[in-house]
Length: 199
Image (tube, rainbow, N blue to C red):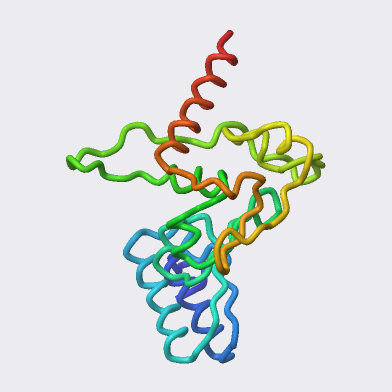
């Protein structure tokens, strides 16, 4: 078999085998499940978790897939426009997010409603990710944030400890963010921006 005949899953397995032969202390996995079907993704993640458990290898997972993060990670750092904006344990960051960007990411995941119906109002984070060369006076996320105020637009927020081991970069971390209220705020901002662009 030639390399060009290997599927994506086979290529991932070859890379993992090459890496395991080196007996690393740290594995940096950059989007390890991109373009893999769900079955192959589960197998690749299983191999990585087995390596972690058997060999004691630390794994740094770089991914946009929150499902992969929830399944494999103990600690999470969320980045926006090149900076860490929230960090903490998996339970803290995904269970009690304190940065509006993290909240927006979590709301973009399709969920099943209580009655068994699929949610039809899939919120998005309005606006565009800024150019990496853009210099902001305030928070990098403020142009897209439904909670932004004058302080957010003028002063970069510090990384504050919001609970033990849980840090967020937001001027409003003292607020306990209700995820449903945040969803409504994101949806309202999205609606208002679409109305302005139509006029």
